[in-house]
Amino acid sequence: MIKKEMIAMLLAGGQGSRLGVLTSSIAKPAVAFGGKYRIIDFPLSNCINSGVDTVGVLTQYQPLRLNTHIGIGIPWDLDRNIGGVSILPPYEKSTNAEWYTGTANAIYQNLKYMEYYNPEYVLILGGDHIYKMDYEVMLDFHKSNKADITIATLPVPMEEASRFGVVITDENKRILEFEEKPPKPRSNLASMGIYIFTWKVLRQALIDLSEQPGCDFGKHIIPYCHGNGNRVFAYEYNGYWKDVGTLQSYWESNMELIDIVPEFNLYEEFWKIYTKSDVIPPQYIAEDAVIERCIIGEGTEIYGKVYNSVIGAGVTIGKGAVVRDSIIMKNTEIGENTTVNKAIIAENCVIGFECELGVGEEAPNVKFPKIYTDGLVTIGEDSVVPNNVKIGKNTAISGGTTLDDYPSGILKSGESIIKAGDLK
Image (tube, rainbow, N blue to C red; front, side, top):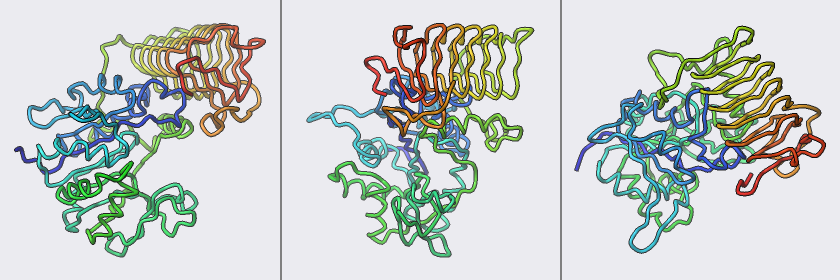
């Protein structure tokens, strides 16, 4: 048996259904972010920057892109003989094949992986947040309080606290009570879904609650341990942290990267964000192209005008095209004389010539009013939009569309075109 002080278990199996067509064929942690990265790069980079060199990545929904991206962990210096990164999908046991049914159930199904390293502490992470955190500082806090469990918490505005699990602590930050999404919160310290467990405590709790359907950390494991008299503490984090679980928050956090002084800085020397980089040529900016306040990926060719946008690698923006306030992911083509306003366009899309995206008055999305909001146009990967069409706001497109899909050449605000095989 190998001894590691702390190993990390990174939960990356989520579908991310609130991201609509962006996640119809990839897991949320594999979605592109910031023109160059994928969401999972942030917790993985935090691990290596914090000296945590053994990471189990638990995958489930559409894992192919995630598995290919992580590979053997070379970009994060996690290609180790002992430790490193391991992909942990659900697997078939001798009696049955069992999907992960909750966050804690997923960890329970990988008990043998953790036992192999027999760590003193286990760090539990989500794979879908954008932030920089030194987990070593959190571990020091855990040790100094002789804690059994430490929960990373973040002060949130009181009016938003009902969306989170909140904790009530004493003056020493020991947790007295939990409230899961309380209608009238009595505290604004919200759980970030980041936990450090003393291994013995975690192992026992997972075994004790192994029969609990959909076993979850916030709902089951932590209340169970707290009720058993375990020492549970709140570690307060005050840096930038963004849950990019909705299209609006995903769009906002990308746009924040291009502020003059970004709140979340991708360029810091001492806390690098690592990612798998493809070997691609440099950018090409044409003589009459215009670019203002943008992040532009490598291998991108710009012949038109781009304002206040995040553009991924290998994108082509045609002559006469105008792109504003948008996120355009890898290897997408924007046709000549097309205008794009406040859109999220996924990887490998082709947008035709003379199109207008993001036009007209807003109207709620007819089929998915809670997903497609805030005036955004959202286009899923590998989609095709034909020439000469107009697309309204709060719209979604997925798949290879033709002119026949657009009555009078228009997709009105609040409408969607989802081709067979795509759920949202």
